[in-house]
Length: 242
Image (cartoon, rainbow, N blue to C red; front, side, top):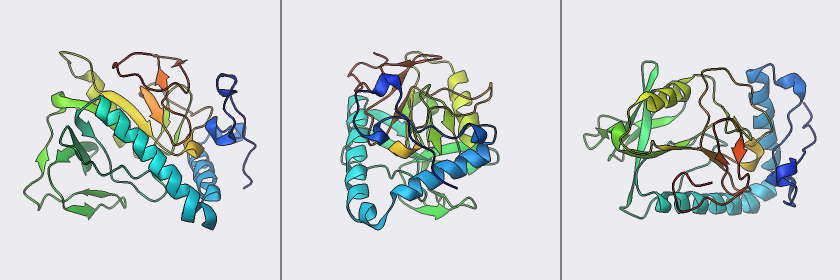
């Protein structure tokens, strides 16, 4: 399969690099989430040449991790993270007590998040998750969550996400949105490489729109309910500000 030509959206025309704008997947792939997943994964793999792995990819990871750290420092508290699979962005190691990170574990058809432990085990999906034989793990109180760092296969300009196919995050994010919040609900921020940002993700009515998508090339994307707001604009210090 050949990689389709990349197009930069009008809203991002000021950015020089082709990876600073969303990739345009072939229209024929948009009817099949499985085909689109393969196209995006090939797009990532194509960029991982020996030279990029040795140098550029490392520099890009450092840049993205620095942006993640900046986001967390602006919104301290309990965040829901993840353990990266191959080709996913590894989250930074936190050197501050102002931010606590919890990690997901599959329980039936749901995700549970646990914090405080250090021991992980490999799940049947090939993802590291909290090993509950380590008694230092404790299940989080979702009412105390400040934000969620959401992995995915692809993201688009509207904050829509294409997951791995199991629906676990879709169900969890809907559950999170259904809760009653005394203040602002948690931020939901997708994390991915620039190659994972595409112009259109096929969605269904029940899919949750993210507040933003953070990659190593565009800064932070902030979204309204149905359209992007301030595409490529740096996240401000005020939660919810566009």
